[in-house]
Amino acid sequence: MSGIKRSVSTRSSARLTAMISHANPHNPAVTLFELNSSATASESATPDRPAKRVKFSKEEISDEDEPLSELSDDPYTPEPGPSKLTPKDSARSRKTPKKSEGKAPAKAKSPKKPKPIPTALETPHPAPDNWKVVYDKIKEMRSKVTAPVDTMGCDQAQRGETDPRCRRLSTLVSLMLSSQTKDEVTDAAVSQLRTALGGSITVAAIIDAEDSTISGAIGKVGFWRRKTQYIKQTAIQLRDNHDSDVPKTVDELCALPGVGPKMAFLALQRAWNLNHGIGVDVHVHRISNRLGWHKPSTKTPEETRLNLQSWLPKELHADINHLLVGFGQTICAPVRPKCEQCTLSSDGLCPSAQVVKPKVSKSKSKATKMVKNAKIVQKDADKEEVEDADAKPKIEIAFEEEEVKSRVKAVATLGDGVASVDLSSAIKFEEEE
Ligand code: SF4
Image (cartoon, rainbow, N blue to C red; front, top):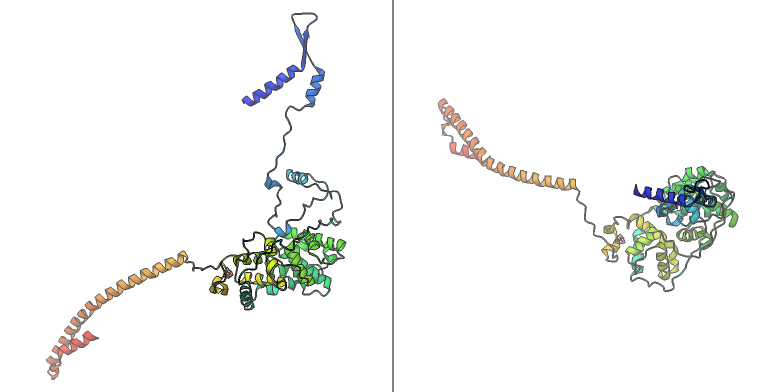
């Protein structure tokens, strides 16, 4: 309240200072006040309260899909046409000035300025001890199991395509869909997309297709909305800048929306059979760190790639992704790796090997308790039974004794000479039984 009063009085005094006083020409005892027109004009031009600045928190202006690293370097796409800007939108627009605003939405966006992808470390990382022994053991383990990547990896996306361009594009699309998605789901999405596009994944078919057609086919992969946009934008860029074909360099590939170094190196290997570097995904990153191949541990797949490339023989660069992805899918899983099945654990070759203790669930322990209690009860029962066993025959013997006695008595009464039966032996026999 006091604050409000103070502001009112301040405003009143400001108004008073805007008036001119002078003596009444008819009555000198009276002072007249009149408005100072110039001051009023300037005052009316100034608002009573200063305009409030709108502040936005960091969360409001951050990108929702930021965790998707391979897709995160895409510039913010403005909404086409005039629209009412929300505070969030206006903050974004202040942050990233939109050069392309007003352009027709169907036209290709100018490609990102290719950022050169580093190819080597200044100081190479030393090769880890025993790396070859470890590599061969993993290879041996992999030869005994079939992993999802063996039957549904990006190599398989080329199935059903005969045209070399379509085969290469299918591989790239498969890689774009595979981010944050299981191989099974990616594989199904590629097949559905091919069907939705009329039997072949081509640049023209993607450009001509409605967004809803693409989304409907790839709806089960992670971040499908964003990937729909990326596939569409990529197709337009391939048409405009690469003669409707997949480019042959890492930098050109990384300039496509949603394509990062991992996808670029794998696309070159699978689509063009070019070995320019290692495709490091989460499996390669995690397993190589578990094996202690990086000193110190690497924080990003890119650090992992540069380390590995500096010591792993080049002829293995194309294979290590497939090898470790399958190993990660079947044995060295992200959560609860099956170290008990891994020969690196038994041979003491993995510093991260875990001895997994079987988890005793509450119900199990309860059952164990019950079994224990049952044993105790049984023991007690047995004891009682033994005690009873001592007692029972006595009763039975007594009964039998009486019965035999009565029987002998009866026989003796008949007087047929059977009275010579040995009673003690008959009683003994019953006792033994
Ligand atoms: S021992 Fe365990 S952590 Fe190490 S590589 Fe094998 S499965 Fe992975």
